[in-house]
Image 1 (cartoon, rainbow, N blue to C red):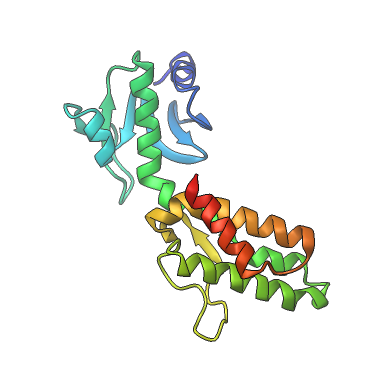
Image 2 (image 1 turned 90 degrees about the horizontal axis):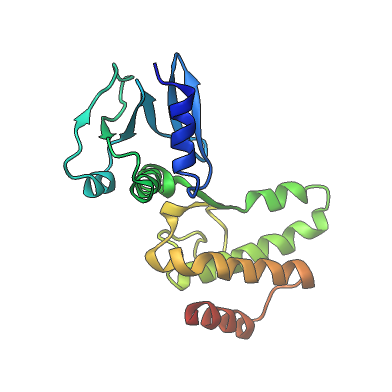
Length: 205
């Protein structure tokens, strides 16, 4: 069994990592970051799911299965030095990022049409605005796949981190925020001149 005192200690050690929690289950604990499983506390020892980055940080760590794994579950690495707060936090962060960061939802533009379903007079303008936004994101290399066809019709409304290019990782969010803030405030599509100005601004930072 793993004691609550040990689980509390692990949470305290990793307080600088966002949204860490330990969930009791059958006398042991699941370690979660932002609700996603990254490891377990088993018999008062800390095990993290095996990742390449985790092994880089702990090259001599044992790869193991502390209990009978569920079908398809990854192996674990044993983190013996849980007193090293900086190392433990780094392990939690890289494990979460490698396992789940690519799945993070960045935008789901379908909600715009859902919340405006009773205002049909707005739908056409909103559709055109989103088509312009996505076209610019594609043309400037922020998205891996084309979100708008050659006739300007939207073919993708939901975007996850894995959909972003390396440039998109840096520039997509600030550009989209500028575009949405402007269109929300003015109720009109920004000009090419203004959009190009925003692109220059986000790329200059």
